[in-house]
Length: 569
Image (cartoon, rainbow, N blue to C red; front, side):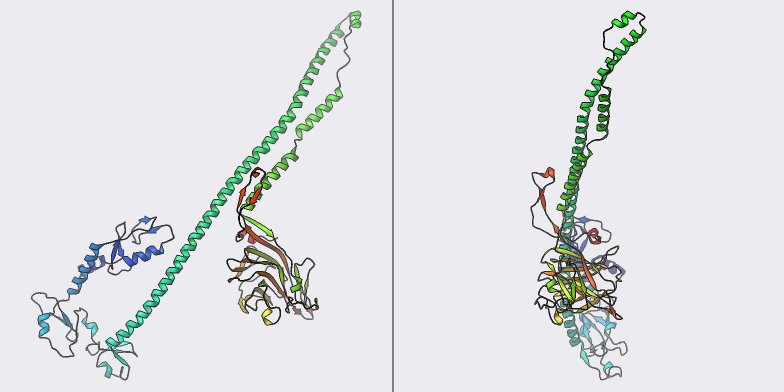
């Protein structure tokens, strides 16, 4: 039996741990069930690398490896299973082993064809296919064949068990009937499992597909960054050479007059030296007539004052290079380089910060710059405009129907408010017009020191303790994501709504009047920053040396970087 166990284990798949079913071979030489290896390779799709699942195998493949049917192994498995089935021998053939054709559950013996002829034909002698585990088919207590299934106890019982107190009056079924019901049940479960597996496979393929796309995008960004910095380094080198050339040019221009002046002064020096020697000679002469008859002009020594002025001016020129021109060159060149980098990736388009006064509730006060909204106890607007809200809330003039935008808000700490986004088609009167109390608006609410994310009247309490009065809304219209952040250090994500937006979206603000005793607290919200993020594709024009760029692509949008999100004005 030990040898049979070894042979049986050698014919087991290392994935499912069962005997091979339709065995196939990889190029590394390891064998697996066809279904098992296909599932493993399917799970490795999209990773760019396939590996053999055999524990001790280090073989890897860049492409999905082919699987070849192992006909020899299949025949070996079939032969082994046939032999294993035929290993049930007749209990009564002692002299020579003879394969059994039937087994009797009552007698707990197996019989060959000859012994079966003389075996009792009584109904109590239940004959089954040859088996070596006959004891499992008999009742443990009564030692009779198991013929029924007790549905209440969910156990197989014999005829005697039906009369015992433990099973008397219980609903029982024949083994065949009960087996058929269970098989039908597990078949239904199998269908569900197959459906679940197919859904998981679809999800895995979808994730792998998106992962590949994300990797491609990351690769594209990486290549663009490398190209950008390479271009920046080249432009910096060019700028450095131009500025150094300008310094050399100035140096050359200043050196020319200095050489002329030095040559002139050397000539004056030689003339003065000659006169000095002539005067010394006359001073040493003892003959008065010789001294008096000398007609050479020895009294003029040149314009000393002019020489001093020229000397000082030249020294000034030497120590005062034209730094204004150099600074201008540096500023212009660096600005063009920075402009190139900015256009290549992110540009922020200034947007309209204004709140739409025509939509403001009657008790709201909009500041002169249309950026701050406050809640007052007195009525501020008497007119009945169709676009004016019944509740104390207001929309922004700016709306977004594509791309990405973020709004930064400064909110009063002690009062109540809602900041969020809304469709322009939101109701203006009635309960459905209240911000975030409908399916057309989303908001972050503060009410008596409690913060919630609210949409369609459903609140999600935020566990995070908000300590900053600066908050941010980030909207990615195409991705259908509306996120809220606390602008602290580091920036804290609060909540993200996911939806399929069907209309343009406005920033929406609502403030409550909160009393403390007989006085009311300051309830206000101010828009601090509103910026739209663009991504442009660019190319250099013929004036590239001047840093001029032109837009050549459609506007695309990108999520702000971590640094951008963490930046507060």
